Length: 152
Image (cartoon, rainbow, N blue to C red; front, top):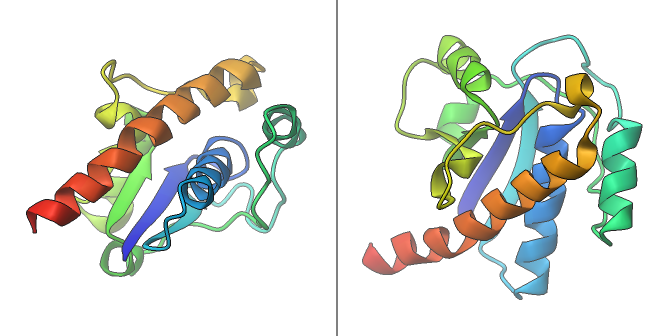
């Protein structure tokens, strides 16, 4: 079982979007060996639901929203999850601050042919571009998970 924790600043926009997209892809591909979750690096949105813009863009693309309330990433997450996947370089720095440096800390678009940060739609208001980047990252990550299992 691979366990993936998607992480962004507040855990109300990008990381629950990535969690929902990956859960959808896992189900659509008939996979049962991947567990997904999400968390924040900050405490600003703790307990809050997903941002309405994230809900709207997921619905527009036919992606079910996973049940969610924002939570902060904890040190124990490093032991409980196989990969902790940030959305941008700022998230990655904050993740390292919370749990220390680790090869388990990566950026979602590291698996893409075009690695880059995923912009925060809280600031840009552009949930569609964020969705496209998250979709690209999750679609690129999924086969990499199974390749690494075959090599083990």
